[in-house]
Image 1 (cartoon, rainbow over the protein chains, first blue to last red):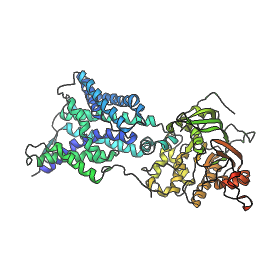
Image 2: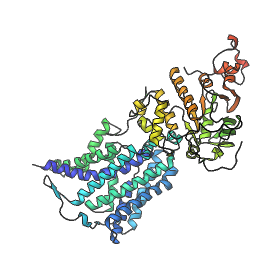
Image 3: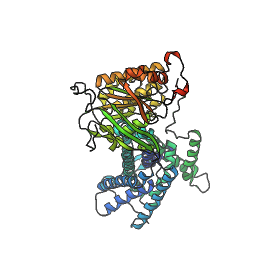
Image 4: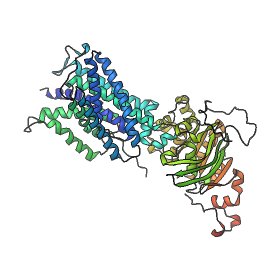
Length: 298
Length: 292
């Protein structure tokens, strides 16, 4: 019986999208220690901008790029207008601002024709036609492209954080703002960049998700909360953690759906199971699998 | 010399300037950093500096001595533009360096102007590797970071072996070297050192100061070092200031200060003729609390 490999592959496919969505949380938390509860709404904004452009006849790939640019700027704008003022305020106040923002963006999207209903991208020529079959599981070209795009972006950001001076500086700001300022780092610019980069990945995640499973406001915005176990599991400040966490949650969801739904009356275990794992992980490693452990010198 | 009109950051590359022609007068050069009658208040109400004036002469090591709470760190923060995060601001006075009014600039522009501070207590990036710590100092991209890394490794030969170690797990002395190296990556022309001896064993303190002296000589880097350890600071500096309750109360060549009876008694722990003075005779000096 080859159910297991099929479930694993399906898990990796959805997991890579989770990882990309989670990356936005990580980028912001890593530099500014803010948890952005409006991330799902930014994902939806990016996806719908791309969709609206394709409706106007713009090429799908170009529309995706424009959407990424738009959310890049949106992230920067949100940081500049709302978060910059909150520097030094209690963390709960900052979180409330992002929750408020999520409602506002939600409301704004409801004003557009995309607020209600389900939409679907028209597949670009490159993604139509026969996909491949892995262990008896048919994978569409869309799914393959989605995984590749997600992994490409994740790999790019991992490289950026570890090898580029700017990426290292962003980690340095997360570590000690004052020390970073002492060598001339503009902390404001680093925050703006983190939000912008998070916006960019949000649009990418939104478009990929839209391609794979259609566009609904609830589904896209909901992914923001859905990936919360991912970031907690992987560690809020670790890109690698987001990748591994995303894959794990994706796989766990599929495994529980495949094996447990038949046993548990009512089914739907995929919604619950990741959170059970989440709680267990937090009990053992409160900073997540790959999160930063506080260093104490004695 | 006070320059009231702020000019754009000095475009001169801030690498080394050893071959430069000596300034006409030793007393004041264009590249001196001057602090002129500066008053600093925190939270708009707590006045910490009450008219501090000092100058860091080009190519020299200047020390700033004083007890806890005298305002030494605040003086450094005022120079380096790092008062704002602590809710402090310069209420009076000017700070200028190489034709630039530093007091009008934010922290980033002060670094661009060539003045870089090594914060008190090292403040290395604990979760970054040693090499990443150094690279973070190159954020303004003044020069090639790979060359700069090699240059800093020659000053601190202990660091290359640690380059991939997480900085939070290195020793206090190593962290001080990392912090100084990180500041050097920003190509300073004036280095501000805040208590490099803090919490370090005497041998390590001596090593750190030797390194600072060497960098000062080889690169012509001006240094302002704030210290409680007056002994080592005076031995390794050209000129010194003594600070107390937000004012400069004494200044002079380091050698002169080191032989001054008051400084000797209260900062170097040597009593005059072996006789202990009554505490009543001491109005303006507090007895120095020793760290070790």
